[in-house]
Length: 248
Image 1: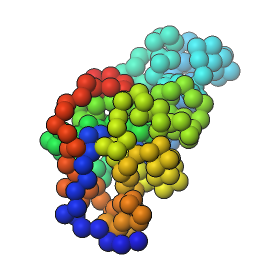
Image 2: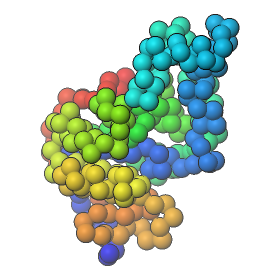
Image 3: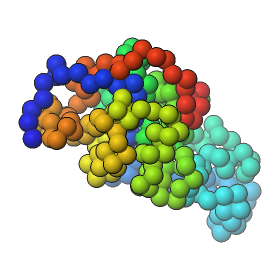
Protein backbone atom coordinates (compact mmCIF):
# COMPACT_ATOMS: atom_id res chain seq x y z
CA UNK A 1 0.00 0.00 0.00
CA UNK A 2 1.41 3.40 -0.98
CA UNK A 3 0.38 7.00 -0.61
CA UNK A 4 -1.26 8.59 -3.65
CA UNK A 5 -0.84 12.13 -4.90
CA UNK A 6 -3.94 14.29 -5.25
CA UNK A 7 -2.42 15.49 -8.54
CA UNK A 8 -3.15 12.09 -10.08
CA UNK A 9 -6.18 12.25 -12.39
CA UNK A 10 -8.96 9.69 -12.83
CA UNK A 11 -10.89 9.87 -16.09
CA UNK A 12 -14.51 8.76 -15.77
CA UNK A 13 -17.92 9.50 -17.25
CA UNK A 14 -19.95 7.86 -14.47
CA UNK A 15 -19.69 7.72 -10.69
CA UNK A 16 -21.61 5.04 -8.79
CA UNK A 17 -21.87 5.75 -5.09
CA UNK A 18 -23.02 3.80 -2.06
CA UNK A 19 -25.21 5.57 0.50
CA UNK A 20 -24.86 4.10 4.00
CA UNK A 21 -21.43 4.83 5.46
CA UNK A 22 -20.26 6.50 2.26
CA UNK A 23 -22.55 9.50 1.96
CA UNK A 24 -24.02 9.13 5.44
CA UNK A 25 -22.50 8.84 8.91
CA UNK A 26 -24.43 7.29 11.81
CA UNK A 27 -25.58 9.17 14.91
CA UNK A 28 -27.10 6.09 16.56
CA UNK A 29 -27.01 2.34 15.93
CA UNK A 30 -29.85 2.40 13.40
CA UNK A 31 -30.83 4.99 10.79
CA UNK A 32 -34.50 4.38 11.61
CA UNK A 33 -35.61 3.93 15.20
CA UNK A 34 -38.92 2.69 13.76
CA UNK A 35 -38.55 0.66 10.58
CA UNK A 36 -40.31 1.85 7.40
CA UNK A 37 -42.48 -1.28 7.47
CA UNK A 38 -43.46 -0.67 11.08
CA UNK A 39 -44.37 2.95 10.26
CA UNK A 40 -46.60 1.73 7.44
CA UNK A 41 -48.24 -0.87 9.68
CA UNK A 42 -49.03 1.76 12.29
CA UNK A 43 -50.54 4.13 9.73
CA UNK A 44 -52.67 1.37 8.21
CA UNK A 45 -53.85 0.09 11.60
CA UNK A 46 -54.84 3.62 12.58
CA UNK A 47 -56.53 4.60 9.31
CA UNK A 48 -58.59 1.42 9.01
CA UNK A 49 -58.94 0.50 12.69
CA UNK A 50 -57.63 -3.00 12.05
CA UNK A 51 -55.27 -5.33 13.87
CA UNK A 52 -51.57 -5.61 13.17
CA UNK A 53 -52.11 -9.04 11.63
CA UNK A 54 -54.83 -7.71 9.31
CA UNK A 55 -52.68 -4.76 8.29
CA UNK A 56 -49.73 -7.01 7.50
CA UNK A 57 -51.96 -9.31 5.46
CA UNK A 58 -53.21 -6.36 3.37
CA UNK A 59 -49.64 -5.27 2.70
CA UNK A 60 -48.59 -8.77 1.67
CA UNK A 61 -51.51 -9.00 -0.74
CA UNK A 62 -49.96 -6.12 -2.70
CA UNK A 63 -46.41 -7.40 -2.91
CA UNK A 64 -43.19 -8.46 -1.25
CA UNK A 65 -41.78 -5.79 1.06
CA UNK A 66 -38.39 -7.51 0.97
CA UNK A 67 -37.86 -6.86 -2.73
CA UNK A 68 -40.01 -3.78 -3.37
CA UNK A 69 -39.85 -0.16 -2.26
CA UNK A 70 -42.47 0.34 0.43
CA UNK A 71 -43.51 3.66 -1.13
CA UNK A 72 -45.06 1.61 -3.96
CA UNK A 73 -47.52 0.18 -1.44
CA UNK A 74 -48.88 3.54 -0.28
CA UNK A 75 -51.33 4.41 -3.07
CA UNK A 76 -53.02 0.97 -3.15
CA UNK A 77 -53.40 1.19 0.63
CA UNK A 78 -54.73 4.75 0.56
CA UNK A 79 -51.85 6.10 2.65
CA UNK A 80 -50.56 9.63 2.02
CA UNK A 81 -47.04 9.58 0.60
CA UNK A 82 -46.34 13.00 2.14
CA UNK A 83 -47.45 11.86 5.61
CA UNK A 84 -45.36 8.70 5.36
CA UNK A 85 -42.33 10.64 4.05
CA UNK A 86 -42.53 13.17 6.89
CA UNK A 87 -42.68 10.45 9.54
CA UNK A 88 -39.67 8.66 8.10
CA UNK A 89 -37.70 11.85 7.57
CA UNK A 90 -38.25 13.01 11.14
CA UNK A 91 -36.94 9.64 12.31
CA UNK A 92 -33.95 9.30 9.98
CA UNK A 93 -32.59 12.81 10.54
CA UNK A 94 -32.11 11.87 14.19
CA UNK A 95 -30.26 8.69 13.24
CA UNK A 96 -27.72 9.87 10.69
CA UNK A 97 -25.97 12.87 9.19
CA UNK A 98 -24.25 13.73 5.92
CA UNK A 99 -20.65 14.92 6.39
CA UNK A 100 -19.54 18.15 4.71
CA UNK A 101 -17.23 16.37 2.28
CA UNK A 102 -20.14 14.32 0.94
CA UNK A 103 -22.33 17.41 0.51
CA UNK A 104 -19.53 19.16 -1.38
CA UNK A 105 -18.79 16.16 -3.61
CA UNK A 106 -22.41 15.58 -4.57
CA UNK A 107 -23.16 19.24 -5.27
CA UNK A 108 -19.95 19.90 -7.19
CA UNK A 109 -19.72 16.83 -9.41
CA UNK A 110 -22.05 18.13 -12.13
CA UNK A 111 -19.61 20.96 -12.82
CA UNK A 112 -17.30 18.30 -14.27
CA UNK A 113 -19.96 16.80 -16.56
CA UNK A 114 -19.67 13.48 -14.72
CA UNK A 115 -22.89 11.56 -14.14
CA UNK A 116 -23.81 10.42 -10.62
CA UNK A 117 -25.87 7.35 -9.75
CA UNK A 118 -26.56 5.59 -6.46
CA UNK A 119 -25.49 1.95 -6.12
CA UNK A 120 -26.91 0.85 -2.80
CA UNK A 121 -29.20 -1.41 -0.84
CA UNK A 122 -31.53 1.60 -0.52
CA UNK A 123 -34.44 2.09 -2.89
CA UNK A 124 -34.77 5.39 -4.73
CA UNK A 125 -37.12 6.79 -2.08
CA UNK A 126 -34.97 5.59 0.82
CA UNK A 127 -31.98 7.21 -0.89
CA UNK A 128 -33.90 10.48 -1.27
CA UNK A 129 -34.94 10.36 2.38
CA UNK A 130 -31.32 10.14 3.46
CA UNK A 131 -30.17 12.76 0.96
CA UNK A 132 -32.84 15.12 2.30
CA UNK A 133 -31.07 15.19 5.67
CA UNK A 134 -28.24 17.11 3.99
CA UNK A 135 -30.50 19.23 1.79
CA UNK A 136 -29.54 17.15 -1.25
CA UNK A 137 -32.98 15.88 -2.21
CA UNK A 138 -36.66 15.74 -1.33
CA UNK A 139 -39.70 13.59 -1.98
CA UNK A 140 -39.65 14.60 -5.66
CA UNK A 141 -36.01 13.78 -6.38
CA UNK A 142 -32.51 15.21 -6.33
CA UNK A 143 -31.01 17.67 -8.83
CA UNK A 144 -27.59 16.17 -8.17
CA UNK A 145 -28.29 12.56 -9.17
CA UNK A 146 -28.87 11.23 -12.67
CA UNK A 147 -30.45 7.99 -11.52
CA UNK A 148 -30.78 5.46 -8.73
CA UNK A 149 -29.79 1.80 -8.59
CA UNK A 150 -31.06 0.20 -5.39
CA UNK A 151 -31.55 -3.23 -3.96
CA UNK A 152 -35.02 -3.29 -5.55
CA UNK A 153 -33.89 -2.27 -9.04
CA UNK A 154 -33.54 -5.67 -10.67
CA UNK A 155 -36.18 -7.81 -8.90
CA UNK A 156 -33.42 -9.91 -7.36
CA UNK A 157 -34.10 -11.15 -3.79
CA UNK A 158 -30.41 -10.66 -2.99
CA UNK A 159 -30.52 -7.01 -4.01
CA UNK A 160 -27.12 -5.35 -3.83
CA UNK A 161 -25.62 -8.56 -2.46
CA UNK A 162 -26.34 -10.37 -5.71
CA UNK A 163 -23.26 -11.09 -7.87
CA UNK A 164 -25.31 -9.69 -10.77
CA UNK A 165 -25.95 -6.30 -9.15
CA UNK A 166 -23.03 -4.39 -10.65
CA UNK A 167 -23.15 -6.17 -14.04
CA UNK A 168 -26.87 -5.30 -14.17
CA UNK A 169 -26.08 -1.63 -13.48
CA UNK A 170 -23.49 -1.52 -16.25
CA UNK A 171 -25.93 -3.15 -18.66
CA UNK A 172 -28.93 -1.01 -17.69
CA UNK A 173 -26.94 2.22 -17.90
CA UNK A 174 -24.88 1.17 -20.90
CA UNK A 175 -21.86 2.33 -18.91
CA UNK A 176 -18.32 1.69 -20.03
CA UNK A 177 -16.74 -0.05 -17.03
CA UNK A 178 -13.37 1.46 -17.96
CA UNK A 179 -14.89 4.92 -17.53
CA UNK A 180 -16.81 4.16 -14.32
CA UNK A 181 -15.89 4.81 -10.69
CA UNK A 182 -17.51 3.03 -7.75
CA UNK A 183 -17.29 4.70 -4.34
CA UNK A 184 -18.18 2.76 -1.20
CA UNK A 185 -17.12 2.12 2.36
CA UNK A 186 -16.97 -1.69 2.45
CA UNK A 187 -14.20 -3.55 0.61
CA UNK A 188 -16.18 -6.79 0.63
CA UNK A 189 -19.54 -5.35 -0.42
CA UNK A 190 -18.39 -2.47 -2.64
CA UNK A 191 -14.82 -2.99 -3.84
CA UNK A 192 -14.72 -6.70 -4.67
CA UNK A 193 -18.03 -7.00 -6.58
CA UNK A 194 -17.31 -3.79 -8.51
CA UNK A 195 -13.90 -5.06 -9.56
CA UNK A 196 -15.34 -8.46 -10.44
CA UNK A 197 -17.85 -6.68 -12.71
CA UNK A 198 -14.95 -5.05 -14.53
CA UNK A 199 -15.31 -1.56 -13.10
CA UNK A 200 -11.89 0.01 -13.55
CA UNK A 201 -11.90 2.56 -10.75
CA UNK A 202 -12.87 1.97 -7.12
CA UNK A 203 -12.50 4.18 -4.04
CA UNK A 204 -13.19 3.08 -0.46
CA UNK A 205 -13.80 5.78 2.13
CA UNK A 206 -12.93 5.52 5.81
CA UNK A 207 -13.18 8.92 7.48
CA UNK A 208 -11.11 7.61 10.43
CA UNK A 209 -8.16 6.75 8.19
CA UNK A 210 -5.11 8.83 9.04
CA UNK A 211 -3.74 9.13 5.51
CA UNK A 212 -5.62 11.27 2.99
CA UNK A 213 -5.17 8.81 0.13
CA UNK A 214 -3.66 5.33 -0.04
CA UNK A 215 -3.31 3.22 -3.16
CA UNK A 216 -3.54 -0.54 -2.80
CA UNK A 217 -3.35 -2.48 -6.04
CA UNK A 218 -5.09 0.33 -7.92
CA UNK A 219 -7.90 0.84 -5.39
CA UNK A 220 -7.94 4.18 -3.61
CA UNK A 221 -8.53 4.26 0.15
CA UNK A 222 -9.53 7.79 1.15
CA UNK A 223 -10.56 9.62 4.33
CA UNK A 224 -12.63 12.28 2.56
CA UNK A 225 -14.44 12.74 -0.74
CA UNK A 226 -12.85 16.17 -1.21
CA UNK A 227 -9.46 15.04 -2.61
CA UNK A 228 -11.19 12.43 -4.77
CA UNK A 229 -13.30 15.17 -6.37
CA UNK A 230 -10.20 17.09 -7.36
CA UNK A 231 -8.70 13.96 -8.95
CA UNK A 232 -11.69 13.39 -11.25
CA UNK A 233 -11.96 14.60 -14.81
CA UNK A 234 -14.50 13.65 -17.49
CA UNK A 235 -13.38 10.87 -19.78
CA UNK A 236 -15.45 12.45 -22.53
CA UNK A 237 -17.59 15.52 -22.96
CA UNK A 238 -20.46 13.45 -24.34
CA UNK A 239 -23.65 14.20 -22.40
CA UNK A 240 -25.52 10.94 -22.05
CA UNK A 241 -29.27 10.59 -21.81
CA UNK A 242 -30.33 10.10 -18.23
CA UNK A 243 -30.86 6.49 -17.31
CA UNK A 244 -31.86 4.52 -14.25
CA UNK A 245 -34.83 5.63 -12.16
CA UNK A 246 -36.36 8.98 -13.03
CA UNK A 247 -34.48 11.50 -10.84
CA UNK A 248 -37.33 13.96 -10.77
